[in-house]
Image (cartoon, rainbow, N blue to C red):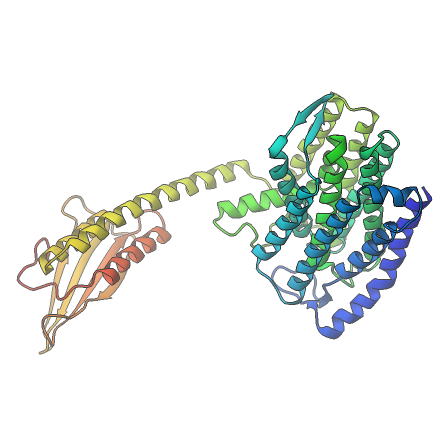
Length: 501
C-alpha cells in the first residue's frame, strides 16, 4: 500500500513541478492553440501540456522496474509486456507531440496506434477470454481484432473529448481512480499471473491519476495549458492497454466494463460523432462543433458547468459500476446495461441523438449510392459507344444517347462562321417534357478539326431532378466523355436527331 501512495503523490508532485516549465517552454517556441472557429477560448493557450503528464507518470512507472521488493518482483514477472506497453505508449505520445508541433495527417496517428496495439498482442497482452455470469467466452483468434478495436477506440475517444478546459483530464482522472480501486481490490482476490496484472494495472492507473491531478491545477477552467494530442493520445492508449493487461489473465469482464463506463461519455460521443460525419459524407475524423460538450454549451451552460455535468455523470456511472465488485453474477450485467442506457438517455436529452433524422440520412445515403451506381453503369456504356464512333454522324448519335441517359433538358450547338454568321441547332428528348423549373447549364467548346474558320460550342442543360450535386456529377461525367472522345465539327447538313432551332 505504501508503494501505491508513493506512486500517486510522486507523479502528482512531478506534474505540478513540470507543468509550469512546459507552459513557459511552449510560449517561448510558439506552440500555442490560437482561437479559431472551433475554439471556446479567446486567448492563445500552450498546447503541449501532455509532456508534463507523460514525464511525471513515466518516471514513476519506470522507477518501479528497479525496485527490490514485492512490487519489483511483480514487474519482473511481466517485464516484456510492461516494457512493450511503455514503448508503445511512448510512440503514441511522440506522434501526438509531432502533431502538436507541426501537424500530421490523421492516418499517421491512427497507424502508430494500430502498430502499438499490435505489438502488445504479439507479447500476449490481448483479450483472449471474457467471463460473463460465471461462464467464460473463448474468443480465440477474434481476441486480436477485439483488442485492436478496444485500444484504438478508447485512445481516439479520449483524444476527441479534449474540447473544454479540464474535460479530458478530469474524465480520465475519474477513470484512472476507478480502475485503481478495482485493480487493488482484484489483487487481493486473485493469485498468480492474474494478481500480478492487477497490481501492474493499479500502479499504471495511480501514476496516471497523480499526473492528471497535478495537471488539472493548470488545466481546469480558465486553463493555462492544454494537454494537446500528445497528452490525450498517451492517456487513452495507456488506460486501454492497461485494462487489456488486466483481463488478459483473469478474463473478468468488469476489467473492461469499468473503463468503458468511466469513459462512457467520450466513447459514445466518438461513436455518434463518427456516425454523424459518415451520414453527412465527411471524414470520420473531421473537426466540428457538434460534440456532446458543445451541445451542453449550446443549451446555455458555461464551460465549468458543462464540465461538471460530465464529471457528475461519469462519477455516478462508475460509482454504480463499482457495485458489481460484490460478485460476478448476472446482477453486474444488469447494472452495466442500465448505466449504458442512462448514458444514451443523457445524450438524447441533450439533443445529441436523433434516430429518425439518422435513419432518414441513411436512406438518403443509400439512394445516392444507388444513383451513383446507375450513373456509373450508364457512363461505362456511353464510353464504349463513343469509342466505337467512326464519323461525325455516329459521334452525334452518341452525344444524343448520352443526353437521353443523363436526363438532359436539351443540347444546343452554336456554330460561328468566319463571316460572323451564327447558326444554332437544338436537341430535345424525343419523349416526355422535361422539368425546366431547375436546370444546370454548361458550355463546352468543340474541337475544330475539319473546317477552318468555323468554331462550335455545345451547350447542355441538365435537369436537376433531386440535387444540384447529382446534376453536377452528370455534367462532370459528360465533360469526361468529351475530353476522352474529342470530335471535329458536328456538321451542318447531317444533323441526325438534332434539328434547327
